[in-house]
Image (cartoon, rainbow, N blue to C red; front, side):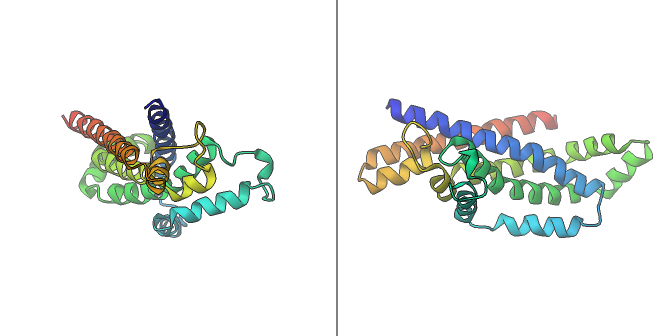
Length: 213
């Protein structure tokens, strides 16, 4: 039981930190793409949209090739650590957040945008207004990204190695327990993973409703 507690805490840490960092990068980037409208916006959005569908196992493979001893970044000694697992999950979550947030920001009513500009809002205030109008959509994007990384197996298995006491998380544990016939542990790990996802979704929903009041 203590093993599952440790694995669960590590899963929460890795998933939440990866989603948080991806959100801190992705949400402002999506907002900037809508407000600043740089020349390369369409191309950048297309790249992120393409990356949404990239197989996570490919992300893991690329990171492994970069960070292995024979790779260009092998000297960093990050392979088989929670740090590189977080990096892998950030790379998986970021395109989802940027793409979904960009879509929600683009849907903000033009009348609201015009009103905010008419009131003399600067770019920062305008971006704040866009955030308020799209808050539920932004939360939806973050939750979608969290769900994606929380259920990720391939990438974290490749770069983390599923090492007991170091890089083993709930999803990789479920695979291991199933392959070794420990079905009770696999089911329990699955229930814990489901409970974590439910708790995060419930918290975000309550926050969203409170913000809309």
